[in-house]
Length: 274
Image (cartoon, one colour):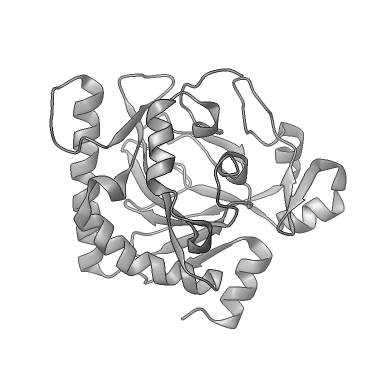
């Protein structure tokens, strides 16, 4: 159950962390499924012919096209993982949102040593190209996330910041500010650097038993992985059920136009320049 204090924090900050959410069995099942998906992604990127997981979408690192940066269509590729995650995540997301939410998209970020920095951005910049307007993302730390290996950083008090600096805001949607960001070019979707520098960034160091929920407006970023091992994080983004089921439609469009910039907002991946 979401406590009044947790709900108030989410409304104010745009994110919420819940410790002890996943038990040992669930952690082991999630890690096993992600390892199988990651191995399939690596084989596909290396050009090894395969028939397993045909729907998996694999995206390479910009600086190393032979290295996996992320893979998507996780729920659609792994039925057992889908069943487990929806059983655990959908009720938590829907309760916090106050209405039924269903999967919109998903991904596993495989942050390899020396790579994987994600620049400051708001997810709404990418998601608004599709039908749903209400989104919430659930982050599962497959591996412990630390400042050394590039844990998620969220902007503290961004709504107060935007209120104090209205010239940094281009519009307000659903009562939340959309900050000035680059439109087109290599930094498509990035919050302008002068804004990002003035914000206070809080690192969320997380364990595999913890669940982090955040909406599509809270600015976030992450640093390069400075450790000697990969750090994997699973993200399942949900949207309001009343706005329709967009999961398959999202990936149909992504497969048709894999280099469209809206699929690469602030990511260390290659896209078409607008």
